[in-house]
Image (cartoon, rainbow, N blue to C red; front, side):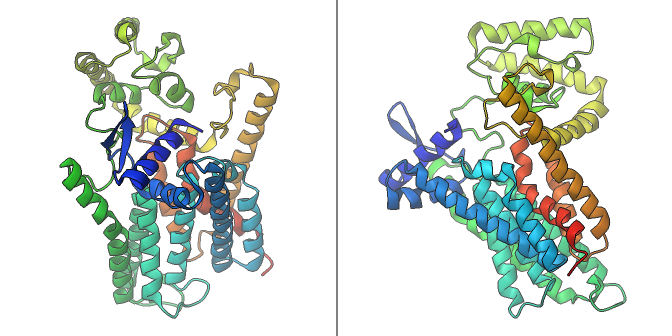
Length: 433
């Protein structure tokens, strides 16, 4: 298990046995808001039935959720394209090693992906794609509740709400134009589109109310989601260091080697890429800061402020690098690098000095991932005129743009986009209905 799995389990057991949503610190249970309650609630349900730390049951149930995701992806492909495309989509989802990997990890990804796929599928159904729904209001409520479940698992689930809401807003604008052919988005009733947006918004946000009230009552904080850096009030905040990291980080390897070790572990200055320095003087300044941190492995307020000054200098010197080029590189890295973060593979796979088994795995996963991305792009080109495709494109664009703002570009953050990626790829197989 990874550290996050142990943290979720600790919260779940404290919630189950002591009625406290908190973490154990030196034998004392401290209330927390660092993690949203979706995944701990899932663990509570399983631990209550099968016993504490029943992770085999957790993983087996996650496999069922992963299988459910495959069926949902197939249904979306059927609605948009054809039965043949649905079969291809099911195979692409069922054989995807990246989705399968996280089904075998006690983390939020598998459930998050499932509810993302469910919300998108219900969205297509609500729009009448692939067959009219007899109860569209119930369908849109289900779509909103699925988004709410996604948000309760991870705060970035809110991007799905923005995508569905944005797409409905676009349809509403189009519906105001003179009506054209039947089946064109302009033929949808403005009233029905507006009501769909209201139902989705309300159903998505209402599940957050108990969590928000709990945080106000227990911790005295208005926090409807979770803190930006998943920290509690007694944990060190490092805004200066984080901003400095964002002035040069572009790849997951820097997350493992530089970002995650702070605070508490040594920073290896030699691991910093050349783009972390703009001049010899800045290189020396950075070396001094890291040496000061390594002396005690603590990020003091004074040291963090010095990192903030360095970050401001670098941003002022190259604003396009900070706001455009580095986010673009982070997005590309998250979508294209080998997805081997759950394996003991060397993250510096391109240096080709890893154990042959893990190097082979990295190269194979890199090629498989590239194949999914290229199939998706080709499918998008072929299906760009299909009504409903815009929802998937908007979701992928918004999610990618958000991920580009992070200082920790972890490839797993793009997995929520794989239902959309696979559906787009399946359009290549729709020739025979």
